[in-house]
Length: 421
Ligand code: AMP
Ligand code: GLY
Figure (spheres, rainbow, N blue to C red):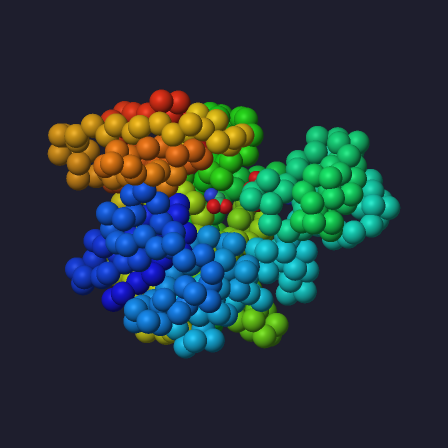
């Protein structure tokens, strides 16, 4: 197939890598891709979505896969579908499940899907009044997309009220904060679950855990994610079943009733409190770095799963996963997540040890290439992925691979998957 992938991260690299490893040959295009994706296909530079759809039409692209949320929220799927093109991802309307936290919370309430008690409001008085009914810590969220930074966990009522005032005045997040959600703090452990959906049917992937904080022991600022592993032993069949019955099924049915059937990846951020799964949030795309560890666990065709989902035929296929575990360790640039970093040359040692060669790989993200030299370009640079029969084996292999990657200022957590060991 000729396949176009939108995005530039490790997530998109890992999808491409999985597709390239299939028996069938595929030709890949990336918009825009990164400094390593051109080894898997062709990087494009077509920013306008109408122009991109025209490119897809002229070049007989058979499937487009959208990685990040921004193009989805902007309506790229609607633009492609209007031309009769096959594209995997939610419509602009359905993407509001991520694009607007107010939409998401109201949807959850309407369809009786478990979530934290909350108020959504643009009124400072109402927000303060509700805050007084909660016990600290208190969670304050900006409505719109804030690149993962729009959530404040306030340790006191005063701190919560300051966060609310700053959001509602437009000071902290501009227009994205002009409506806020104030909600109760959920105390439990967090999971990332992914359902690949075609509007009606879905395939639930093995549950993963991300590591959002920058530093070991979950300290330091929030990031996009510093590492992940799957499947996690923290989920048993009973919990999967609860997530299916209480969250995924009512969400797909509800979105149909709303006239916005959900196609694409439903990423459910879950907090497990006393054995019960509570929905923290929805995203409408794969998690990054979760995607990088889930793709290599799929043993059936990844491109076929996306194609069948995009053509509403998921019920026809059986998706299979290996019995192994995967651990992904993110290597980030020096100043992540605060500011950009000076490009640094990446040196990759030759992997000589067969065990490491056969059971690890790298998914490249924030990299550029110039004169055949690979540079760390800021942000999250790459993910070292290890596979193994146990989480420990997968993790040991991932860290051995990390030891073979060098660039100035490289930053990584050394405790990925600690929850499972
Ligand atoms: P969100 O963008 O809504 O997923 O929030 C980002 C992070 O904040 C989540 O991954 C959680 O770690 C944390 N968080 C969000 N809402 C809550 C809540 N109600 N209780 C506890 N932690 C939360
Ligand atoms: N790793 C979490 C996310 O992609 O939002």
